[in-house]
Image (tube, rainbow, N blue to C red; front, side, top):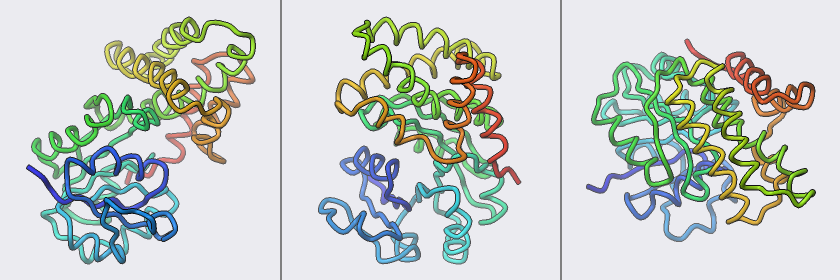
Length: 276
């Protein structure tokens, strides 16, 4: 059954998610930077946040963490409690959103950049008031763009470090492999083994670590093959100043250890998180 979904934020992730679901559901989007949405033809563009919220059954929050509080404050007085909130904002807990918006149904999702080629890894956790039906619906949305895994929210910092920042570590390391005409498939296999070990060290169960690490490594290889974008440019796309990927890269360059890179990225994710 088609639902009407609103996406707030039309940056890298918001635009990719809209492409992934626009044929499945009715879609409205809004971004404060109107240049990002002015040329859209198959997707409805809302005039403002309130206009979007009033038109949809579910809202996907795809804004940057620094803009998150402003968006919550603006929509909370118009948000009817029968709407599902799906947040992909890194480091912001369902409890934090519930504290601001009230007894709303929230599902938190951590997708990685593999969703750009339909092979993403998206980990989901459920807020206090969300139902199993809500969880199923959010999972269905992200299944269109790759594989999904339900996970305890307290593990989201580890997920961020492994599947969110992991591609940054992959693209940083594979640059020298490609320059030396070495086998990228063999590098990917070795990377997955190392990332799995790092994921376990960060607190993920073995099955979770294997699922997330293998999906991340394989998605990175596909991104290179299908987009033809240089690895250093792909790394740049997910490396923000003061973020988890940069913290992990600094550790990777200092130690040469993927385990240390993931530890540093996880620590930074925890420092940036808004839990209460």
